[in-house]
Length: 278
Image 1: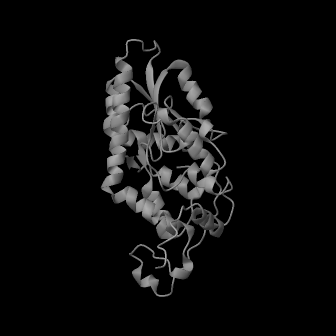
Image 2 (image 1 turned 30 degrees about the vertical axis):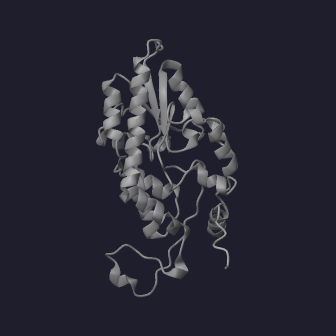
Image 3 (image 1 turned 120 degrees about the vertical axis):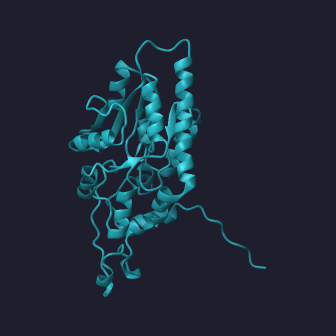
């Protein structure tokens, strides 16, 4: 979930007069008080309610299981102990309740509110994650959680991983962000002592910094150049709510205004020109 090096300002929601009588209901912003968080609605409700989203999540973990079994059955497997590396947020843990809170409150992502959510340790597993990780552990494979949650959030994250029953929920296997969001050094640390069979994540940076490009077009091109890795060594979970893909729309500058962000999002749409006049 941490938006890499994002620094977003909070946007207060101006409530329309008369809403105080509806205090028990989710806050609904008036048309003149629309905020950038309102654009999260479709993505968040899809992740929380669509059977198609659950199907994609199960599909990713089933594919990971097939690739893991194939690797473990190989006659020329390395002598190092086997392991997989998984991201945490929107890969094995579901943080969409936090996104829904952003929508209802009219706020944007902020480190303070995110930290408060993490401290609840209440995120639930992604569809299929618990069964997959149980199978991984039963196969004698270690799970390393390489996350960009900050080191200050490590204790709460471990509580969450343990609460939902994930294996290897300990400080040895959880590698949080310290000074840098780049995960390369942490992945290399695991690879020094283990045979890393596959990596799972929802962001291209979960796999390689080679995908970290400044524009959306360049990121797509980098993926197309490594197409054979996806579905084999790299397993991607869908996440339309946030990620480095969004930053690429703003040329990496998350400090631009909400209005500029909204314009940039629309500018990247590929449009049909509409029906021609008879």
